[in-house]
Amino acid sequence: MKPKREKGAFLRQCVGCGKRAHKSEFIRIAKTADGTIAVDENASMGGRGGYICKDPSCLKKAIKNGRLNRTLRTSVPDQIYENLKITADKNVDD
Image: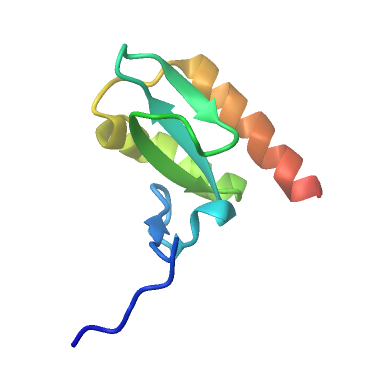
């Protein structure tokens, strides 16, 4: 018999470095059904999503290798990357 899994125990993977952790440790980027891409502050938006560590170096890796584009299956606008940089920098200062 399989052991019962804790509620919400699913791990997410960082697009930049590949680290696996709970979703609260990441910044989520979502692509909604209408094609809008946004930084999902509360990790509650519907649609396809990708997770990035709150570390600016992971963001740099994701941008350099185009991993976020691949994950969301679309081209991510530069404005989203700017928003991610601001969010990552804000989390480093905390």
